[in-house]
Image 1 (cartoon, one colour):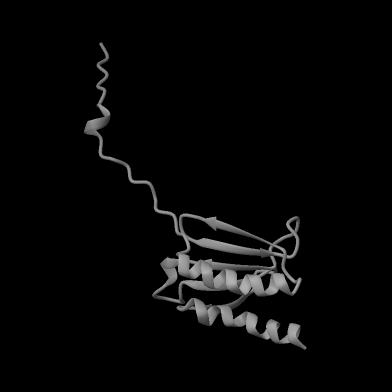
Image 2 (image 1 turned 180 degrees about the horizontal axis):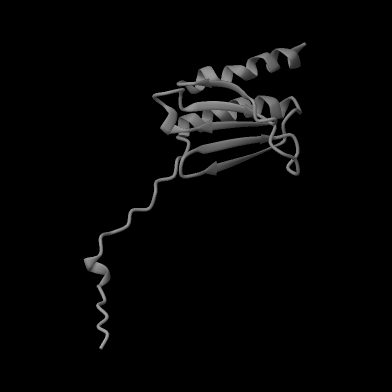
Length: 117
């Protein structure tokens, strides 16, 4: 004789869904202000925002059908080590990494100067 014991859902511990990482409103505002500058200059045309379990990613595209030119990533797990923020180029090279978003976004200042001249 086989006895099968079933447990009710109430007796099982609640499984916690992993938290996804997302941008705050102030972070997104700062990123979109840089993005808007380059859209107005005609350099960038599209973006995508991804909220993953370990990172939030803002991808910047020249055209929607291409690979992203840049990725601005927020990785809270690295906040104490290398910094939570990183800008990655299309080739996968890390252009700038740091603890503050404003410092990391300064990598685009050089490109702003090229557009102004």
